[in-house]
Length: 179
Image 1 (cartoon, one colour):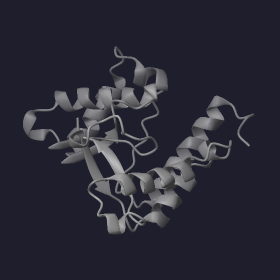
Image 2: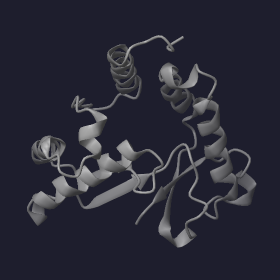
Image 3: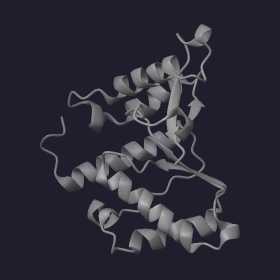
Image 4: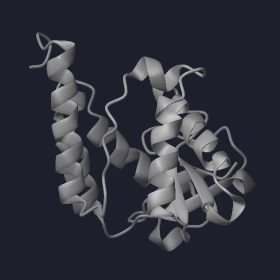
């Protein structure tokens, strides 16, 4: 469906998908900065850091959930690095008390359990499915990320020590790196 789209058209599709997800998820705020991926990945580029710093100063979040540093996508890693740089610019009293690197689509089996934070996401399958389904541009090409993410949550819940064996069939968990 999207194979003949230009880069500019795909950017607009992805922006619409993000806005739909924010509406479905009832996010309090969703900011689209419009920085090209190359700038996000470039350590010398400070425009993203400047924007993130302004947002952090205005929003004063207590907790931030973002991509993890072991993400396989360079742009996602770039986002985390820019975010950490922006947080470090803030006075200590204005910094979030918690920064959590999340993994949704892949696993963290390579990490020890003590280095993971397990977040139970039971009871929200419809919301999770709706949010994943919004990203049609990423699933219509045959890679069913929506189904894979649901399976991953189920697998994490089944194999997590935090999940009692009696609930393993129905429990879902997202594994989060805390380091």
